[in-house]
Image: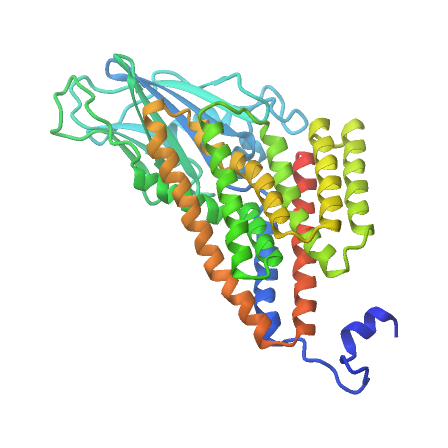
Length: 441
């Protein structure tokens, strides 16, 4: 029998008679982790489902602009994509289904009655991969109550989030926004009896608590972020290591979240998503590198893989800025060179901090798209970031005790095998996401 077979089948004393029980308690937390990682891979196809709308209110009418990714519209089937957006699937003469679908699922209600569109929704120019539609609605002159109701994609994606932003023509500084969900699909613009009929009054926008809940929901549905946090727990040996790593990650992503939402940094979303996927693979690779004696072969393999990715970009088979690949090559080479000669735990904190900066740009995506006014940024940023931290800490407090318990209950050998399998799965998941994101799939 070869060495690999001997490693898994023979006991530590070399006797061929005993066979270890693969279902040792030490492996249970890792088995759960493997199942979760498998679910994460299957859930990564579409990711979080989000759409945006802007409402410009004038005299008893409003101009509605809806913006969403083509990937989101594809949930309704390929026939729902706008004409010409995917030439190989549709011709320019076919019906524009979103132009009819969106006004029927995003409506303005006046005293309980839908305000009809004045014209057919028209498609507006937007960035590649996005669809934007605009139409105007008019309500009765003396309506007493106004509210927006969204049912966009809730039939096919119950967790869909719709961000509605309201602005007033006669008072452009008065802007409000609200997150609409299946549980809370209504945004009140004016409630009956609160204001005179000719005044839109105060809108009931999203509160600090709404953004707190959004942050928690965002981190718990962000499989790539959770996978990275899980990788950090695999690298941590003690509770103090966990605290340092999570603190470094928190400070970094909070910093770039603020910078991105303030408009001080404008990252390329595709590059950010690719580097986040690489970070998941990287923490798993380091765990495996440490477990196998810090051999040179593994870092070299990573560098060769990045060079191959660069070749794919040059040949047009992948979409990623070459400067991003060059940065990852330099970062990886420098980090493994330092880690090979130093066992200082703060070096790993620097790794976590560096990747945390990129994850923060990923967190910022939703708030950036909402284009919040300055006076609404503070409650939104504070609530969202605290929500992310609450969700993140909750995950750590749930997983870390399970990992420690598994290591104590089982034999060191069973723990090593379980760790190796989980690390391999995490690395494969990160590479899968990377390939998926650079290929544009």
